[in-house]
Every structure is written in structure tokens, then in C-alpha cells.
Length: 591
Image 1 (cartoon, rainbow, N blue to C red):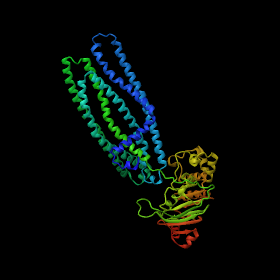
Image 2 (cartoon, rainbow, N blue to C red; image 1 turned 135 degrees about the horizontal axis):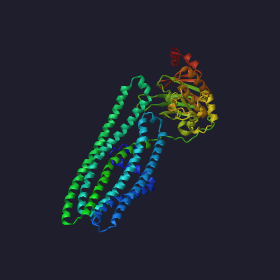
Image 3 (cartoon, rainbow, N blue to C red; image 1 turned 120 degrees about the horizontal axis):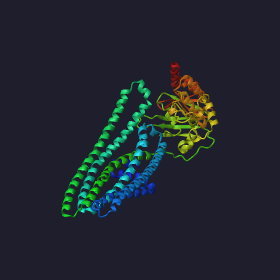
Image 4 (tube, one colour; image 1 turned 60 degrees about the vertical axis):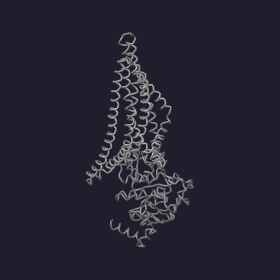
């Protein structure tokens, strides 16, 4: 959906038409299965009025004994019709489920593909609950309601039309009464449609909020317990749950109100029919069998009409869910304007030339006019107070963040001219926040395009990361699962596993982002030893809070308020007695 369509008011016709078109264009890809399901639904619909028609010969001729073969013919006809309806309904529902699940599969694939391609900034918004809700709830609602709508509109419409034909055949005068009241029922249903759409949209948004609140409570359960956050979390949960209850009650009220209003219209129709039928019976123009067949058809017509009336609510829920799903699918993916590839072998020379960046809604630049060069194989450390722009600066190298002015070059090529996949294939990252997947140690070490690494290569990487002895002591060795969020590993073990992953990738450029800041002294020594092996022969950018870890860097860039204030080796900066010396002495006193 284009941006213009998204800014159109929710109830406007262009948006609804576009959503309908996009949903059913996906359903239409499986038109053969859909067509077969429609034919089967038509067969099931044809059996319903036939059962009503049987009432006329049953009452007019069956009980009089004029046609003895009715004794076996009519009962077998009923069994046969019911069996035929069951077979048609089974296969039509199976085919519709097949269509719905294939559409759901394709939709989720498109959503996940777009999710992987979103810019880094999109994930900084913290809308995880809403994203997960789109995959688990909204996508399922789109396909579920889409096939439900098809089923109701096709099958119930055919049933209603067939029953109306029977009614007209039996008595057109009585049928005229019904046809007058039908538009009244439809008008009543339309009055509730817009309200249901608003309520359903609010419900979808609040469901996402509920997912977020519960997810945060699960992730932060230790903080909640230690800081006595029970009442606060209960309050948040109660607020969201109460909102959902109110939305559900409003929706239920709207749905419930349609039923009695429709029933009132039906009761008026039935009263008028009885009066006219009695009049026709007295004049001999209507037999008992004809009236029974008419009433049987009339009794059967109410349920399909009710389902047709209620389909408006399903349509609104489908459109709200579709709006949510296509909002994700239509998001602008990460830009990749690069056309060049770095010449092999990559040397790893990095240049920052007058780089400036300001985040949206920020009151000042995060980094301003940054310029420095990292020669191949050098280690350059970025230090400074929190918020000085260190992480923003290194995130520009893999193009997670784009500079507003200036440029960054790798081996003399601007990073924006390099294909993203090629650029990132020559970069490795080890950060404070290690991301490991709920899989085996081997799968995490050999993750990504190098996932075909053999066991010996993985063991060599683990040994270089000082982790092999620990892994060999596990029940399944390198095939031991690490658990969700690597909960079975300590902080130092997670860091060394990330180092092993970077070692096996063997990229010429390495980014270390506070890789040891969250570790105790013993773990830091083990990780630092592993990092030294990893850094050997690579161009390395190091972000460090603990200045003791960057003393051996070839050069140190000192940042303050987004600007370079000092630049040089450790000894030079200490002798200059500037900001770096001040930070170093402060940490020395703390240690």
C-alpha cells in the first residue's frame, strides 16, 4: 500500500477497495482449488431447498396412500440428500482450508522477508509486540476471515436464492412479503458496520500492547521481583486487559443488537405470512403440503440470511487485520544502491571523512565533522563519555546508520557504492549484547553463509576462543543446545562463543563494541585473550568503556559531544593530560 493510501481515513472507500483487491488477488492465485470449492458449495446448497420441496408430496400424497412407493422413496431421498450435502461440505471446507493455509504461508513469507530487510532504525522503535502480533494473529485473521467470507457469500447466497425460488413457486404472494422485509434487515446490518470496524482496529492495537506488556514481564521477571514492581506491572496489565474487555463488550453489543432487530423483522414477516396463508387456504388456492413446504423453506432461509448479515463483521475484522499486515509488507526496505564489490583480497583500510549525523527529533548532532583513518591491520579505539557518538560512528561502517554529510571509505571505495551483502561479508562484530540463537553451539558458531563449516573448523574456532575445554565437557559437545537467549551459558562463555563465530567468518575488518564491559575480571581476562587472537592481522575498531583494554591500541580517538577532541597513542594522550587522561585517572582510582 502506498503512503498516500495509508493516510486516507480508515473508513474511506479507496482504502477498503484496495485492501479487498490485495487480499483476494492472493486468494485468486489458487483459483482452481477455489473454483472446485465453489462448485461443491453449490452442490451442498442445492440439497437444502430439495429437502423442503419433499414436504409437499409427503403431506399431499404420502399420507393419503395414493402413492405407496413413497414409503421407501421419500426416506431414502432424505438420507441421500443429507449424505450428498455432507460430502460436498467436507470437500469444500477442505479445499478452502488448503487455499487459506497456502495464502497464509505466502503472506507470512512476504512479511518475514520484509522484516529481515527493514532498516536498523525500524527496530529501534521497540514495537516488538506489534510486529509479533502481525505474524501470529493478524495474518491468520486475514486468511481465516477471507475464506469465511467466501464461504458465507457463496454458499449462503446460493441457499437463499434457491429457497426464494422454492418460495416463489409455492406462493409468490407470501414470498413478496419476505422480499419486502429483507432490505430492512440489510439496512440494519449496515448501521453497525462502521462501528465494528473502529472497534476491531482498536482491539488489534490493544492486543499488540498486551503482547508487549506480557513479554516485558517475562523478560524482566527478575527486575520485577528485586525492585518490587508487582503492583506497577499489575496496573499495566489491568489497564490493557480492561481496555480489551471494553472493546470486546462493545463489539459483542453491536453483534448482539443486530440479532434481535433482525428477529423482529422476521417475526413481522412470519405474522403477515400466516395471515395471508390462512386467507388463501380458505379460498382453496393453497394446500397443506404447499404451505408446509413454504414454511419449511422459510424456516431454512433465516439461518443463511443471518450468516449473510453477520458477514459484515467478519469483513471488517479481515480489513483491519489486512491493513496491519500490508502496513508491514509495504514498509520501505533497507536501501541498497551499491553496485560495486570490494577487490579481493580486502586490505581493510577505513576512512571517515567529515562525517556528521543527527537522529530524527534530536536537538543536536550525534557526531559532527568526524575524520580519521584506520590503516590495514591497525587497531583504533574509540573512547569517550556515554552519548559521545562512539556506537553511532561504528554503526555507519556496515550502513546500519547513514551519515547526513561526509562519507566513509573502505579500501578507497565509498560504502554507499558497495553492495550491502559484499560490504557486510567483510565485517565481523562482537558486542556487549551478544545475540545467540536457540540452537546448538555448532550452529551458532557456524551461523549464516558459512553455516556449512565442518566440525573440525568449529572446534578450531572454539579452541582459539578459549572455549573448547568447556564445550568438550558438555553432554553433547558442540551439538549441545545453548537454550533461549543462551541462558545455559555464562556471560563470558557467550562472549567467547561470539568471538568463535567471528573467527570462523575470518572477515578482514572487525568491530568490537564494549565486548568486555559487562564481565567480571576473570571472565574479562579470558575474553581479552580470545580477542587478541581474533584481532591479529585484522583492521579493528574498538569501542571500550574500560580504558585498560585499549592501552595497546595503535591509536585512540577520543570523542566528546560528537566531536574528536584528542587523537593519538595511549602514552601520548596521557602525557597531553586532556580528557583521555582525566577519564583514565578516574577509572584507575575506581579500580
